[in-house]
Length: 175
Image (cartoon, rainbow, N blue to C red; front, side, top):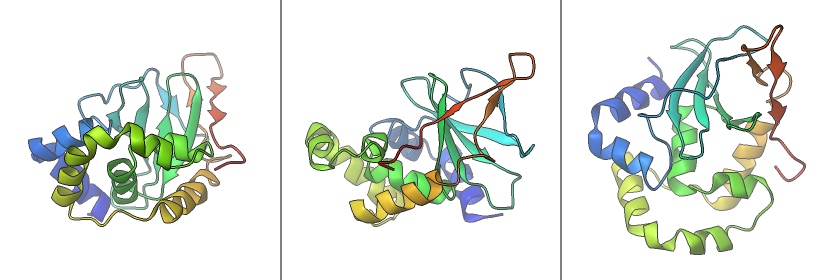
């Protein structure tokens, strides 16, 4: 088993950890049903592991025991590879629950101010995970590196239409 597989099992078995990931990190393992069935062009399996309040879904890409980058697909038909593995993804959402805003070129100061009231819960989550939050520049560099790998192999295709339709990349020049 990999560190990502171990972390997923830990989240599933520790209600306090799962609860803090659901709020304030908006990474809820109770929301594993994606808006639609997706597949990857490479045929790698997708495993939904969590969802967020806006209908987005986090997927592990690939088979257990191997490299499993994390894909985020929103409910509006956009997707981005957001982390190299689940450990990196959870560190990102725990440290920066507004990670999508960072990806779109926003300064961390404004969203950090908006999330200030959740600081105590975020600190508890970070302590429970036993991580040191990466500096925002490092988190953004990792996010950009993962996002740059999205196209073509990790851009999902919806299965509901004949032949399927590709999601759009959420990767922008800001990422």
